[in-house]
Every structure is written in C-alpha cells, then in structure tokens.
Length: 98
Image (cartoon, rainbow, N blue to C red):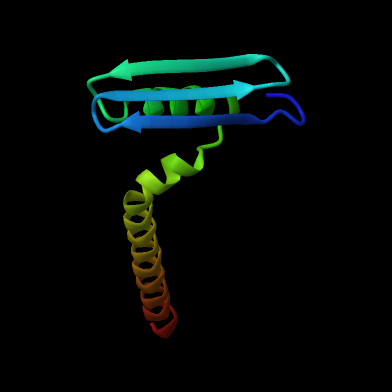
C-alpha cells in the first residue's frame, strides 16, 4: 500500500439470509465486493481479510471481535513477565547473600 492510500468499506446484512461487504482503495482502483447468502458474517470476514492482506493493519471490526482474546493474552503475558521478574530477583538475592 502506497503513501496516502486508504481503504474504505461498508458491510450490510439481513440476519443470516444475506450478507454483503465492499472495500475500495480509490487511489489504486482496487477493491472487493462480496455478496453471500446463508451465513451471517462470511462476506464481512472475507472482505476484512482482503483489507488486512493489503494493509497489514487490522480493522476496527477485527479488533472488536477479538478483544476478549487480546485482553486474555495481554493479561497472561503480564502475569508471566511479573512472575519471571520475581523469580529472577529472588534468585539473584540468594546469590548475593551467599
């Protein structure tokens, strides 16, 4: 994606009957249009993947749908870092006292 490129889009749906999604990069005139029936989010997910493939930046919808996972993984990472730090400092203190 070049300097100043922006991908814009819109999703629409009617429960599980119809789902559609559009993404367009006006600068490169590249885009995707997905119409789909029978699944509530397939078109949106497909268009989101296309956008991520072009920009390598997740869109807001992807972040919101994965927010719980992101919070859990961040919390787990913080716990691991704190636990490791405590263990390292305690073991270092034992060596300095001996």
